[in-house]
Length: 447
Image 1 (cartoon, helix red, strand yellow):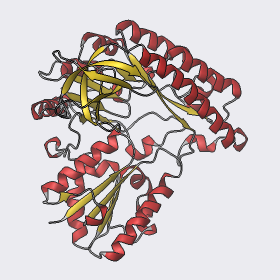
Image 2 (spheres, rainbow, N blue to C red):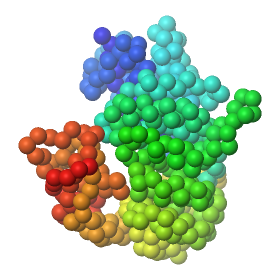
Image 3 (tube, rainbow, N blue to C red):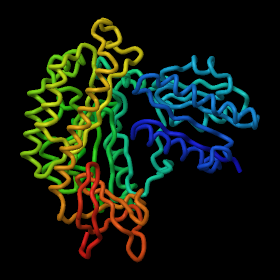
Image 4 (cartoon, one colour):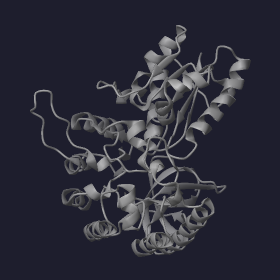
């Protein structure tokens, strides 16, 4: 019996792509393994967001190459964003790669493997109009959350971002397909569904072939998904701040099972830097949106993305970012140093604008230090509260399990007489706060 091993780097979109490929392979009779040494097929599902992504990918593929010298029948597939970016160059640089599959061709892994078995070195990149997507064949490897892609690609041209090149232009799935997948997940037993897209709030009903499609947008989809019987939690990532409408805010406020947690990337607190990034909004626009959201939904937890050290960022620009962090008080912050990416506009900015690495390092640490204080304070405000916790599995603490609240906080709790099954809800009371999580205890009560 052939075994396959998939190594996944990057975001939730890549995680779901790996689940899609695993499902197709299992339909062909292959079985998954967690042991690299046992695999007859290895897939590297790569991420291209950070600097030197291609270099790191080729380094990892080189490690696979050593395994292939020991087992001539081992097949190696290069997948994901770097594979899409590198294309034919990947086949040229590494003769031990059997096939390359880009992000737009994930649904073709079955035919790609079949061609590979016939001795063909397969290159499957690009973004064809017709793309197979069988949600019933996805091998869901999470017991607590079902992910649903609603829109792929991105039409924005932020000067630092490689996503439009690696994921292609925006392409929306029809609402009927999305709703069928959500209902399928709930029937399967998932209590939480997460809607995915690089710009998830750009979703709209794609035009019908005869031009008779409904004029539906993301607010309509939220309103329809939230009332699916049995769906306890509905999340979505990632939203583009400029395009969050009043109707979308109203939907978030209307449905209790839409998570009071929202990821809203701001990238910088400086209008000057935002203009150079091509973000299309000002810090004032962002502040107003945050105010509208918090006025509509009590207890809303916000997270964000920040880039420090963007070309031309001055001390004043960075201080504006720190000021925004202090003002908004995000529940969590994902901060990174600027990474020059191929085929993006930012790499053409003057070299004189480059921020020294040591300066960017120091700024990043200042963001983390400020955010740690804020997160501890926000978590302390939750101590003594009762939550319905969605159990995600075992904690790193010996003898503890962990889960997430509806506002996406991690809570560790001691195991009772029997472990709580992952993917189920349990009632907990929070006892102690840390920077990145809380400690709690199970209590009696209905979830």
